[in-house]
Length: 553
Image (cartoon, rainbow, N blue to C red):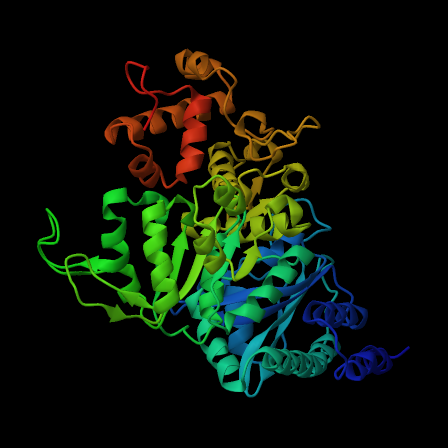
């Protein structure tokens, strides 16, 4: 079969599918599969151009073929990857010489190559133009040098990219039509303008996350109160930000308040504001969170921690929109959309008398449950790739790759701390890998990507995992030893990594508690932890206030 016939056979099905109702991910997957039939390669990727909140340019993988699954979670900063920059600058199909000195952004990510860095190989790519603007890139890598020799592969890639641009443009237009089912056209355009800058992306392709994203799109355009539930560390605040970003209030304030961190005597002042002289220490007038969020969104995190008296006053605001500053007789009206979040069972709190039933029903007009990480099949590697790329950029590393055993360890772990635990695990693993001696690179040879091994993650998958994954005492992935006191007394040179980390963790927690008079809320803020997590951690570490009789407050 001639090259032209091969190209035609690959393009015809794609043309026929332009009007079909395919999910974007499937459309892009078929696009790459067709590309590799025309131009056999070991790896192919479709990346989209994005502009970050700081004004920098990024490339985000939308589909991959022959690359490690965690690639989908990465974002490539354009100024850190000169090959991508060269492709965008060329504006057409471009092949790199096999001896090109430019670092390869896919070092350590090609699925069929376990070594690093990538050996001399063929690499080419092409810009996708949509409406006269660069939309993204198609890239191809072949480990066999000479695979893309001659002018024919470049011509085929250029022809293919023209159809690929039509494919992604069609996918974008179908997405716009689907959005208009839920919102007016003006609202959809408003969301497309503001959402990328207003809130971080909710990463993940699992069915649980797709269902959550559909629910967010359904309720975002309304002003209904939303109650977000889920375990600690699942990303409830990100969901709240996504709701705000997709709403008609996206260009107004998003105000967040952690109800668990508020002293009881200051709750009303924080929420409703006060005037000068309202109480001791009120030296000037101050707006409360409701006024700050006027015409925007107020996010009440850990709402289950609010005292009953405050719940009653909040209920009145939710019903009438009227607030009153402390020390002021006059009321004022606010227009605020309420989103609340909790990791507690609020229905049980109502039964136990810790929450008013009317307040609970006002908050939970539209409940949203954020699934735990262990219920999001396949998302662990996508999120790991995102955290790896961010850590790589922050540490100024040339490249970071997850070895196969590390990927297996991540998939086997139950993640009782969810996405927050995964983020900390990845950052810690990079630090551990940096401490490991590395073989010196040959002169003028590209630096090998930093390999993350399973032992760097310090995870211990076990078949005896707790039936209650949130219980720290049964957590199979815990880094803390069974006897923290014995660990603290041990010589660091005689202990392993987990014991050393546990001693350091115990020292940090002890210092934070002592510095804040053994009060949970300020110590948790200092450690950037949830208060309930700090309490469980301190119990597990055997920490208590001096004198021991009174429990920690």
